[in-house]
Image (cartoon, rainbow, N blue to C red; front, side, top):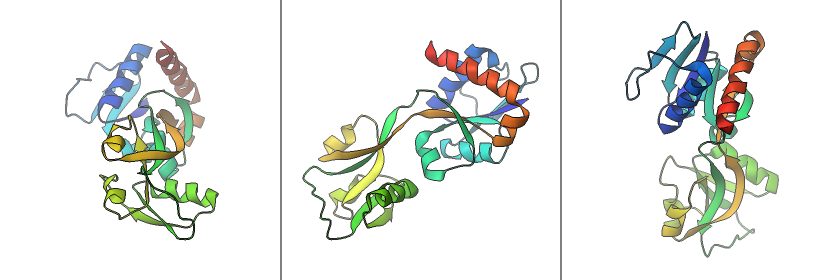
Length: 207
């Protein structure tokens, strides 16, 4: 069987619908059910729901053969997995944002508020900029408004929250979307099944 880790929420539901359309449906699946695992012996697939940030951990450690994770999670945690396909869903951007009148004073250390510590460190290391990381878990936009940070590194979807709080994007670090990832050992030993699933899923994405 192929074990597939799906992120809880709308993205996971959408991916499951596409997999079902590709011939990997599961009779045991019920939308809205609180059941965490459902499998189809005949179809050779087992699905389980996990927190989006944990999908890559399950795949890396072999609890799942494949999974769907956001590029933001992959860039932040750098799991030891293969990335097979860009599913083109959940599109947004990882950006540097600050108050609209902000100007960088390069004579002092830049204060960066973010949940994505590793992403921020790598980005500013490439620029050769000294930074102080302020780790936050939510409402990152508050940090520059309250003067706690100079900039934030965060996910931007529509940009509405930034505009409403007099913040703006100053740099885009990378584009984010949902990616199909695979455990390295699984890719070696279940290559035919996983390659077949990948191609069928990509065909569904293109429809």
